[in-house]
Amino acid sequence: MAASIKKKYKVIYNRSSCIEILSCVAVYPQRWKADLDAKASLVGGARDTKDPDLWTLEFSEEELEKFKLSAEVCPARVISIIDMETGEKLV
Image 1 (cartoon, helix red, strand yellow):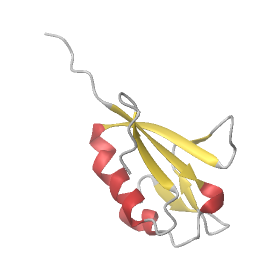
Image 2 (cartoon, helix red, strand yellow; image 1 turned 90 degrees about the vertical axis):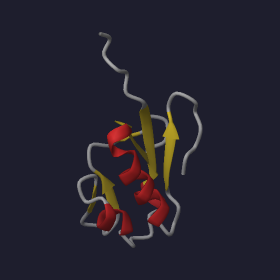
Image 3 (cartoon, one colour; image 1 turned 180 degrees about the horizontal axis):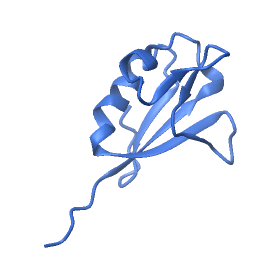
């Protein structure tokens, strides 16, 4: 029996444009935390090598709904969710 392949997604977060409302932290505190500068930080994320304002993290389907909710509640719209298989922007 072949192992099932889990679908992969990527969250892209423009930290420099965060307006410090922290609604992402409220809905998904396991992956978002408030930093000392009052902006949200993406737990487990890494700075993009081409654009240091962007933070990225790849994740699987288990976290999709929570990350989508994080992006949807962000009033600044600085969180994007990308389907890595299709390249489609989900949020």
